[in-house]
Amino acid sequence: MIDSSLKDIAAALRAKTVSAVELATESLARIEAGNPRINAFVTVDRDGALAAARAADTRIAAGDAGPLTGIPLAHKDVFCTEGVLTTCGSKMLANFVSPYDAHVVSLLKNAGAVMVGKTNMDEFAMGSSNESSHFGPTRNPWNTTKVPGGSSGGSAAAVAARMVPIATGSDTGGSVRQPASLCGITGIKPTYGTVSRFGMIAYASSLDQGGAFARTAEDCAQLLSAMTGHDPRDSTSLERSYDHYGADLARPLAGLRIGLPKEFFAEGMSDDVRLAVEAALAEYRKLGATTVEVSLPNARLAIPAYYVIAPAEASSNLSRFDGVRYGHRAAEYTDLNDMYCKSRSQGFGAEVQRRILVGTYVLSHGYYDAYYIKAQKLRRLIAQDFAAALEQCDVIAGPTNPTVAYGIGEKSSDPVQMYLGDIYTVAVNLAGLPGLSHPAGFGKDGLPVGLQLIGNYFTEARLLNTAHQFQQATDWHSRAPVF
Image: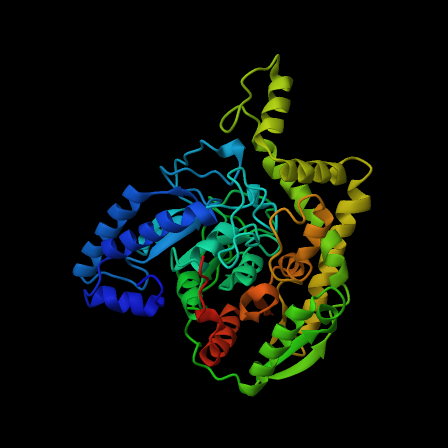
């Protein structure tokens, strides 16, 4: 039943052909069987899941059920969960039990979703491969020698392996879209400010945004609709009316203008990804859409701008983890300064330390204007490029990743090569736009390829409609790995 759509699962729950407890038990059994090979979960909350499932069955019996009541769900371990470990994939927080729920967690708990556990991730969401986790790398269900993408790789792998039908993630530079692409599922990052960041442990505050994973765009629409809304505890949360993102799914694509940035189809994309993307675009044309060439002239500067801004914000955000109030504290030290140094060097992994050092450097006296301010100016130019391109089209399309999933350990010794894997995704976060990745075929070694759709601000419903119509005409999203 976990392999079914949310609509079918909800119908079965209402018809009493399956109970929420049975669904939770099935999900827990799949996790128990598959997690030793995939390492998608850091924490499995069996008792909490079964208690939540019993409460969901009570709501269903009373006629008080919503679309997500009784649906098994996994949260990326960046979201605080009351009474459950919230590690952020780090030794620094390996024993941290949150005293409160993140806003997203509260919303989904109130909707009746059943959290079965917390998923593995790159440490403090810093990475594109899910290899920097203190708890070991998550493995791609399509080939367990390959990475699942990051930083939300655990959530993507859990959905791809059919351990849960839906999962949450966070996206700072592509951390929902990239693993969705490499694991062959659908993932969406909404417009910055539509999902509250309260209780989502910060990496780069002006870029971080909660997102949703599911097999299909239709299921992503259900999950995202339950996650969005104004939160006064988050100063960047937008005060606006939020419609159900699935309202326009049935809209035909006739007349849709898809922009193809020439910069996305230049050097860097592997041949197998190019073939899958071109075939997907041909399918969109058959569905009535037209394609037009657009330009994002500053797209090549997105990587350097991102890797100045994001580490700078990380340097500030992670300064709170000092071994004083909570988190890892060194066992032996001579004075306060020694405790800080040892606790942070022991508690943070190599990638996190690298980004903290870079961020501190670009914010330091004499370098702030030379690096940080220039990166922010580039950010504005990138946003203006998107605005100009979206005047010529309704959505922008291109590859999500330049290659299919690569081998675990293949790029670990070369951080710059790993950073270049973000080439098609980071610009979307710099501009604060919504982006979606959906399955578009398979490439080398039978590994999934994702197509990225980018829209104007608050056009999530249009992106989901576009992907849904594609998925009605293709079956890439329905294929499951055997591992």
